[in-house]
Length: 244
Image (cartoon, rainbow, N blue to C red; front, side, top):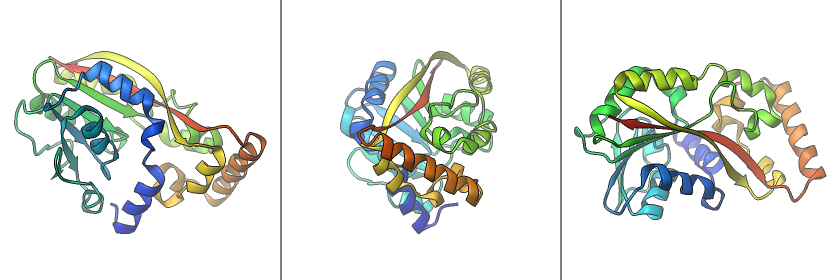
């Protein structure tokens, strides 16, 4: 569970600059067709980076659902963003109240994936999409952390696979629509990315022993010195499913 300090570290180290999310903005617009006044539920909203981006990009009303009090307190609530205490398996949202759902780096935190899929089917209107941004086993080789801290791939092996997620959502009444890998720029350079890393704010990095952490930092800093102009670009998957 996050306390105030780790929540603040998460926001500082893990939230991505919007200018690095162009491909995601375009893909979400394509698959969800968000329009002003529609409702999107952000499940596991964290500190609200995507919730506020959705509001600003598309003019939607975002229901930002987050179980951790320290994270919820950092979500900029206000016009267009309603902050709710809840979790994926028991959403504080009325039946058929949402036009789309977003799960950003949340799947591996869920206690019951099948229950979460059923809950999403309940709160979404017929035909509404679920957009899942996550790392998946066997598909993480272009993740920045895996590239420079290769031991982190072992942690991703324990995440739900694309097949497991698709089957859980199919049982709940969803059809798989798309699976795409998309780029995101975490920092303008590798050096800036290295300077902004916060081990305590990242579960994958926290799981490393000290030797692996130091070796990864050295690897990253060497790359930054050799390629000073290279932006810190990572790739993640977008899995899109549609409610029946």
